[in-house]
Length: 139
Image (tube, rainbow, N blue to C red; front, side):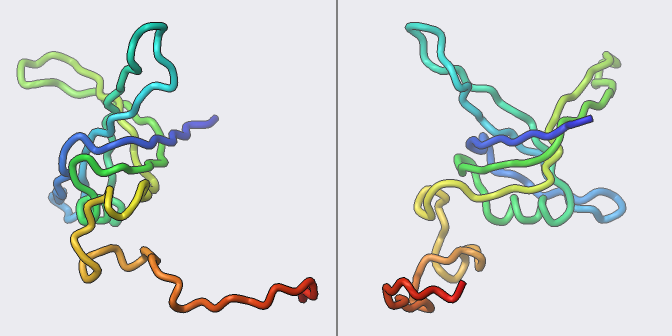
C-alpha cells in the first residue's frame, strides 16, 4: 500500500512549537495550495491542507518558517477520530510531515540576516573555482 503526499504552498499562519507531556516537540500548521486547474472563466481555487510535524521537523518549521513562507512538505495522510467540546464525533484529516523544505528565494522567505539565516543555505560561490574547459575528463 502507498500513502505518500507531496505539497508545495504557503503557510497560512506562523507555526507555534508545542511540547507534549512527555517532552516531544510538535507543531500543526495549514498550507494553502492552489489547485492545478481552474474552471473556465474562473480563478483557481485554493485548498487549505492541515499538516502536523513532530520532533526535529517541528523545531525546524517553527524556527525557519513564518506566515506566508513557501514550503514543500513530504509526508503521509492520517485520519483520527475525536469528540469536540459538544460531544460530537469528528474526524480530522491531516498530513504527517516526514520532511519539509524551503521553496522560493531567500528574500521571499523573509530571512532576517546572514547570522540568523539557515546555516545550510549556500548563497555564495566563494569556495569554488572554475575548472579549465578541456575535454580530458578523468572519467
